[in-house]
Image (cartoon, rainbow, N blue to C red):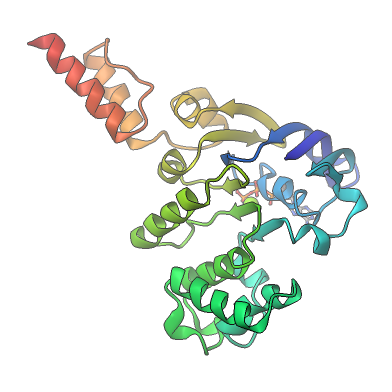
Length: 275
Ligand SMILES: Nc1ncnc2c1ncn2[C@@H]1O[C@H](COP(=O)(O)OP(=O)(O)OP(=O)(O)O)[C@@H](O)[C@H]1O
Ligand SMILES: [Mg+2]
């Protein structure tokens, strides 16, 4: 379990970036974290792998205070894929990049080779295995960063903007991966501005605005609340916008729909009522 207790953080003294954060993330959950640019999302998630330590309050990962442990120690439990993949990649080849973390954690050569092949394949990168990561496209580099973190199979996974620069096929694959990662032992925290992706990927959604948590609940409930979306500078899902348009003409049309199934059900109800 991950626990933020009264966490405050400042990079510069007197300029708080996070304030009064209380948050509990339990295994079995895929949680989305959304909020405007500069809200403090990346700053918040960097506290989970100990890259940043709270200025006030405390962060616990499986009951261990992050101030009492190293990032290297936390890396066994917490996988972190950076917003900018270039901050993460350093090896000469894709194979070496994926192998690095596995070797560090002491996997046998055979297991390293197996997992390198498995994870390059999973992210559609097998054919570039022997080449430099810096020859890859932006979207491919992002996927390599994912492969190199996921291959150690961490119990806690943090993805900072994973859909950035990904085409529709890669987003669909990422969604499949997230669904397969959902497990009673795993926690996945997904930072994103991608409303349509969040609806399909997450079980719980948290909104951070100007360094403070302003909402925590079901994606459906939050993404259909205009006030919260305004604060986080997000546009409602297209289907919610459609529902609001429909409700102008048919006041009984529900405006809290976010998914295709809910929309079809609402339209069917409307049609049944009019027959
Ligand atoms: N290393 C740093 N030193 C000083 N200030 C920083 C540092 N990193 C971030 N900040 C500031 O902290 C605030 C929060 O930044 P953060 O990167 O956490 O936002 P974010 O919610 O992830 O934004 P985005 O959606 O753009 O990724 C911003 O005002 C930013 O300028
Ligand atoms: Mg960020």
